[in-house]
Image 1 (tube, rainbow, N blue to C red):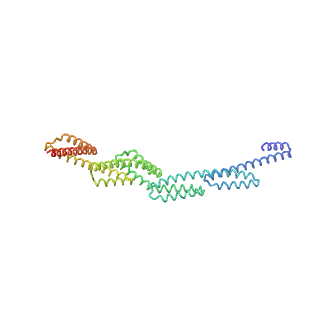
Image 2: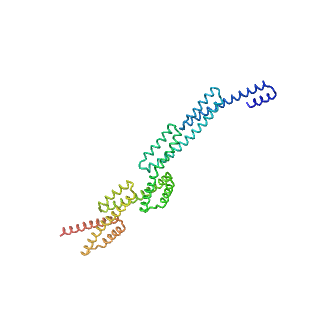
Image 3: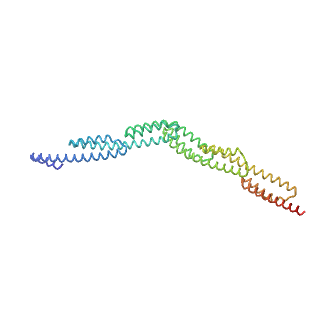
Length: 361
């Protein structure tokens, strides 16, 4: 095309007008063919891109409009307009793709905020409705409206969360104080919660809520672990109490109560009550074992007055007493049970000997 045009100009300079006209017409025809071919390729590329952005959830309406107008111009052999509309269609497709990507990004932000709001707000119905409107706009391919609705939703959720986040911070601070009363380390979590307060003061409510959620998880986990350990100790103490034959209805009732507290995630009060249950159960076990030892010592004193040798009994009772003093109530009971068993066997032997002597007489 360029070569024919240059040749036509040269022929005009040589006053060969007929030949120049033929060269220029040839150049024009070649240019027209080139434009037509380029327009066809551009419109086809636009159609492929329109399908791609549509499949990604974008609104390709404007793209198809440009393609249709370009195709009509092509059919009317107005290739210049056809090419122009082809390029406009490509630009519209790229814009639609960018808008869809922005909408998806904004929707993710809304989803994240709603997830936080569900954990913080007592009634998240309103923020869930905002999210629903955004999703509906996107599903109907009203992409620009989805972007607009997303930004409005983010502002509304942030405002809605302000008071709730403050309350959430205070409740978490209370839990951290309870952690300290459970003799758990709270320094790192307290420092992290202070960061949430700073974000809150700067108006960054979502960021503050995220930090609170980061703190809340470990707080609950540490309190649960400590409470579970104390509860297991209480269960063990009550089982020992039952094993040694002691009874305390209040202890058993409180054990059931503290288990209910733990199941309800009231870890601090479960920890406190479990500790009291364990102490009372150990006291009951200690009292029961001490009473048995006192009874045996009283019998031994009577035996001493009657001249019966009690040295071995004294040694074994002293062993039971040491176990009791060390809180080893089951071991103490085992020593006492063995002692009683031996005493019964000894008594049976004495009875048989007495019967034998009487029979001989």
